[in-house]
Amino acid sequence: DYAVGGFYPVMIGDLFHERYYVLCKLGWGTFSTVWLCWDLIGKRYVALKIVKSNYIDTKSAQHEIKNLRCVGKRKKIVQLLDDFKVTGVNGTHICIVFEVLGHSILKFIRPKVGIPLPIVKTIIRQVLEGLDELHTKCGIVHTDIKPENILVCVDDLFVQKLAANAWKCHRTGMKLAGSLVSSFPQNLQSSSENTNVNQKKVEEMTHLLLSQLQHLESAVSHPSSSDSLVDSLPDSVNKVCSSDLVVKIVDLGSACCSELISNCSGTIQTRPYRCLESLICAEYGPPVDIWSTACMAFELATGDYLFFPEAGDHYSKDEDHLALITELLGEIPKDIWTSGKMTHLYFTETGGFRNIKTLEQWGLCEVLIEKYRWLPREARDFAEFLHSLLAFDPKQRATASECLLHPWLTGA
Ligand code: ATP
Ligand code: MG
Ligand code: MG
Image (tube, rainbow, N blue to C red; front, side, top):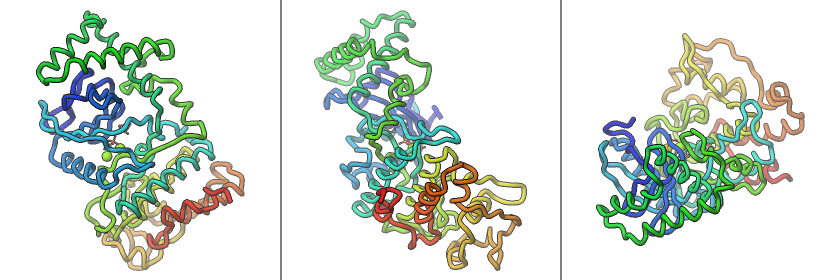
């Protein structure tokens, strides 16, 4: 991936766009790496997403920027702060600057256990609030709702600790390399000569980081060998378990305009969160995000995927996915499966599966009681909520605002 068309080889201490000073890695995805930076001009921490330089990822990043501009400032969607391009050894990369957020909620799902139910509700409520705004105010469908794309908001102190920890790591590395930390300002000065950065700003930043480090040194754990420094902060995991938890939706790289309802123009959504209309290649719109939200809610509550299809010797992953949906939610009505372009691949004329002969019906409520040992009442309430988000017909599926009024979330 670190080749022509791939990632930009970022170094700690790199200065981008004459203002963003790289402190540590926050995360990475298929198309990008994301870095914690100090903004010399804005005097704040930011997250810098540097996208791979190939044509397709560049187009998708331009698309992400367009979507983010259209979204503007919203409570439940990550905020775009700036964008620019940088040219390096692997080509020209789009860079997107965001407010800094913390871990994705994926981090907090204990396998086979999940997250406590009140916290699941807090998260799902906020995701639906974000989706309601995206769908109704911005006319945008996200198309990639999944735990990795829901990030926890963090306060300034958290980010300061993270930066201080990164700085400490960097200093240790420099010491190991035989250079003293005191050489850092000069290093920065020499690199800034090329980029004409105001020297005073650089000094200010160095001073700020060093003073933060001094204040926080005792509170900061020993840096772990992890790639992402967020992991080295012990209190980050506890934070998510508090009821004042705030989350935001990120990654609008695959989002599309809800007016341009597509009729099978390529695969959307990450596999376990892919909705019925996408699987059979029927028209889609905002309801695709609602289906994904249901899959995510189940995963948060149980620690298991709702649907995890696998290909067999005689059937495809898509056919298995449709069979799993049928086993859990019942038979897919004919008018639904005939609305898809790809239906003939999976269904016979009479509506049976082409290659999967035996199905075992096991309804959602029973699964929660029998497999996950939920109390019948809790299972029934949750299953009822999920059923309204997993309606086969996208027109019948609850909208985000309707979901928000459901008793499972309101507690009525
Ligand atoms: P994907 O493969 O999911 O499409 P991507 O390359 O489009 O990934 P993002 O999902 O936007 O990239 O970001 C990758 C990761 O970087 C996120 O999962 C998260 O860990 C981290 N990240 C992204 N944005 C931020 C932010 N604003 N603050 C902190 N961390 C972030
Ligand atoms: Mg992502
Ligand atoms: Mg993405």
